[in-house]
Amino acid sequence: MSGEADRSNPMDRSHEHVDVAVVGSGFGGAVSAYRLAEAGHSVIVMERGRAYPPGSFPRSPEGVARNFWDPTNGRHGMFDLWSFDGIEAVVSAGLGGGSLIYANVLIRKDEKWFVREQPVPGGGYENWPVTRADLEPHYDRVEKMLGGRRYPFADRTPKTSALREASKRAGLDWDLPLLAIAFGATPDAPAAEGVPLDTPPYGNIHGLPRRSCVLCGECDIGCNDGAKNTLDHTYLSAAAHHGADLRTGHEVRSIAPLSGGGFEVRYVVHTEGEPTDFANLRTRTLTCDRLVLAAGTLGTTRLLLRSRAAFPALSPSLGTRFSGNGDLLGLLFDATQPDGQPLRLAGSCGPVITSRVRVPDAADANEPGGWPPPRGHYVQDAGYPALAEWLVELARPGSVMSRGTRAFLAALVARLGRRNRSGISDDLAALLGPGRRSATSLPLLGMGRDVPDGVMRLHDGELAIDWTTQTSRDFFDGIRSTMQKLGDELGATYRDNPLWRLRRVVTVHPLGGAPMSEHPDLGVCNSYGQVFGYPGLYVADGAVMPGAVGPNPSLTIAALADRMCDRIGSEGLVRAGVASTTFVSGAAKPMPDETSAVVPKS
Image 1 (cartoon, helix red, strand yellow):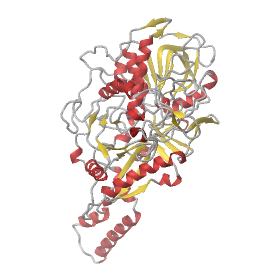
Image 2 (cartoon, one colour):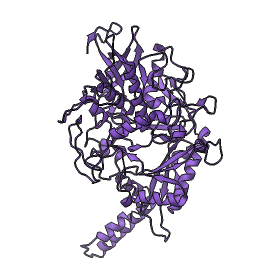
Image 3 (cartoon, rainbow, N blue to C red):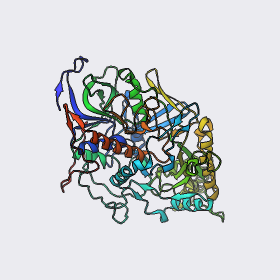
Image 4 (cartoon, helix red, strand yellow):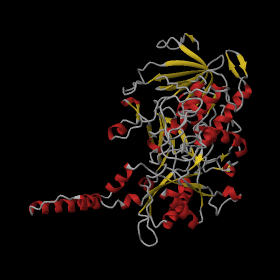
């Protein structure tokens, strides 16, 4: 590191220089940090959120209420909620990015869904400049690093077994995807609940014990057992082992190219729990030879839009090809067996997602339309924490009120009759009710190839998105039809989530904004994520997608970042004016037998 004067900002007279600055610590950022630090380059990762070691994810109402991201009001929590025209988005702030709240699913993008020149309403084409074959070795690497394993307890998990049988009867393609979850002491060990996990050779930045999955359904609100192989436990720990500097509470506000090459990064440092006054907060400066933007689709696109004046050669495609990856939530209630008895689905048993149903795409059969439907999709079981079961029961106020009234009257009669009642267990059980509603209910998560025709822009300095469900209406109706079929086979009632009635959806997989392409008129980056016109500037997150991935996109984002790092290594990374070619594609340096723990800087 070296320091020198920054004469452009009297508030900050010094800054650091580093080979590579990585903005964000999600799937693209974490992979980039590890691969480049592994190759011997100095790397700084700048993450706006804080670290979340095992046991730190809140569960109390007070803790959950504070666990949202709104720094201007002193909230520096994990969940960052955005609202736009036609769509809501949920993303994460924290060391490990979206891996902290995702459902661990690792599915490769379908080979024929890497479409070429597929027309998009309003003009233009969805065009993928990479193929499945290009990504195969990178998929392999990422799956190994994240410990991908199929769910081993399917036969004794009610929701998994039920979805398998319903899919079979409906003629749907069902399978168990790889999950980035530790189901045993090591990836190859026999499956066992709650056993201590072996520490990998690169150690763990948190320095705390982890244990295998206990099937509690809490994946999406943070795994307090450390069973999820999140990025902080894997790629970021490995990056720190190789010398990467992981900085939490650091939010990048602007970027600019330097006249002599490289980039300037301006950022602020949050003080947790205190309101962040961005207008008056001290801005700090960092320079780097290579800059990797991995702040997530929303964060990266907003940063590029805000910095557009400094990058006049940016493609006119900046902000285009937004997609929600077809995310749609559906709800099944009151599942019933053929004999009329309740069918227990037990949504809180197991990881959040255990299995998937795949409905093919027109591209699979090289057909322009008809059946299969034009754009394919997936439907997955969407479990939830046990706490949610209480909420489901309380959501039926009529039954709760009637049970409460009966219990009150029974107690009143006993009191007025001066009867001694030492046993009131039956009254309490009646008050709680049979719990049938929660036991027989299950959310379903749909996703797939919606139309990537959204446009991201700035409005009064803040991100805005012009997007509508209308152009993807046939696609969403296809997902709803699949969910209805599954509901019918389970003897359940299917209901759209309330937002769909307003023709709005919630996405946890926003994509696009800086799409890759073979030409700068059609995309912001090339197929390796390098921004056209600005060598050394890369985008390594969901913003590079020229369309929906289809299945859960995290694996594809990570694979593209891994491929990007191979290219950076093959080109050589300029360090202090000298070309460095020490990068070894896909090969890790020898690691010591002992473990290490590196605590991120805050």
